[in-house]
Amino acid sequence: MIIRTHYSNQLSPEMSGEAVTIAGWVHETRDLGGIYFIVLRDREGFIQVTMPKKKVSAELLEMARGISRESVVAVEGDIKSEDRAPGKFEIIPSKIILLSMAEVPLPLDTTGKVGAELDTRIDSRFMDVRRTETAAVFRTRSNVLRAVRNFFHENGFVEINTSKIVATATEGGTELFPITYFDREAFLNQSPQLYKQMMMASGLDRAYEIAPIFRAEEHDTRRHLNEVTSIDVEVSFVEEHNDVMEILERLINYVYREIAGTPELKALSIELPIPELPFRRITYDEVISMLQDDPNVGDIEWGSDLDTACEKELGKMVGEHYFIIDWPTDSKPFYAMPHEDKPELSKSFDLMHPRMELASGAQRIHDYALLRERIEAKGLNPDSFDFYLKAFRYGMPPHAGWGLGAERLLMTMLNLGNIREAVLFPRDRRRLSP
Ligand code: AMO
View 1 (cartoon, rainbow, N blue to C red):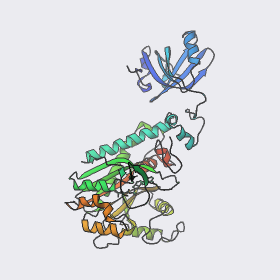
View 2: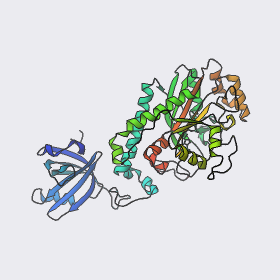
View 3: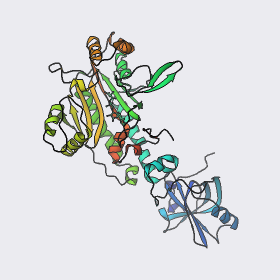
View 4: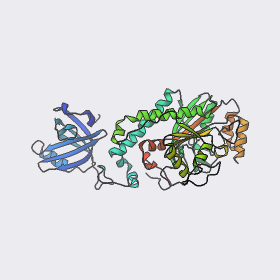
């Protein structure tokens, strides 16, 4: 049997006289001598439970007084309209059932009166999510991922799930976590890249995956994690990176529109401006000249990646979402397609928010010989990519795709200061628990 009959937001003063059962946590208590209050918190809000000495039994009152804050209770009682109570009604209890008593003292204050460091909050994340603002962040995360899935399904995508245990590095890098796989060495996958590309040889045409990626990078910043939720896309029968950039910018716009009016954003007091389409496209070469004489960035060598200072300066100049396109071929992984007429540049892109990079992607090489050549040119051994290269030997359509970090998307939408606020149980250089 479900314990509660109503959530707090399903009750109103108009229901005065009705008997209901509510359930949740003891948020606060107040003792005015002749009257005892419990403010009960459930997922949707707060309900005042009022116990005037004259109207409830002495046993009930004594029992209520013995319940510690954050204990879990169910309360049976009648609704009474009361102008001074939150929601303008209160519950006069006939029975209180103690479902789980909370220990004292609490590891965290849920009322928001006492602030806590992010580390302390994460150490007791279950309790941190009891706070209205934290709950609103993670409910928004759920809303964002639902909107992303809805967008993909409305646009003909098939959801795939690929293995996170792999034998070789995806992109050749060294930033992998090794694991023991029976008597062999294996790795946690840093990207579903090779697998989503192989699926383009399957005839699914449009595939997406939302799953963890693992990066053994020793970063200690506010925008890097070692385990990220990646939103990955791959699309067949496209010939230009712009084709999948359009999908990406439409997705961002769609998600913002879906999230803008939600009660969670109101709880966070956030006004979400909808990014306008199309996003600006700036070539890598243009970026270099934009930053050339900028005193806030050092000398940039053509062909190098852009560091944080560059991203920050560009963000200030552009002020909204934008793409950096046509990166030097050598700065991108082996699978990025070079431009036919200018092979030193690739058909690749990064999606930028003024604060940071959100996604990167490219038109891929679908020609077997060229792909082998590029793998070798990167100093990698094509033999260890046999399983992947095989998919290019029996009919591989032209394809392109991208990967978008879910935490960075949420972080930039909600203007969170630290990426660890966008993930329930962050994994970083120092943290492996909870
Ligand atoms: P890339 O390595 O650029 O591309 O990753 C894509 C996006 O994933 C997010 N991301 C991270 N977020 C937080 N912490 C990290 N350590 C981290 N690493 C990555 C970022 C980033 O833009 N295979 C390609 C994608 C493709 O071409 O389809 C790839 O993985 O938001």
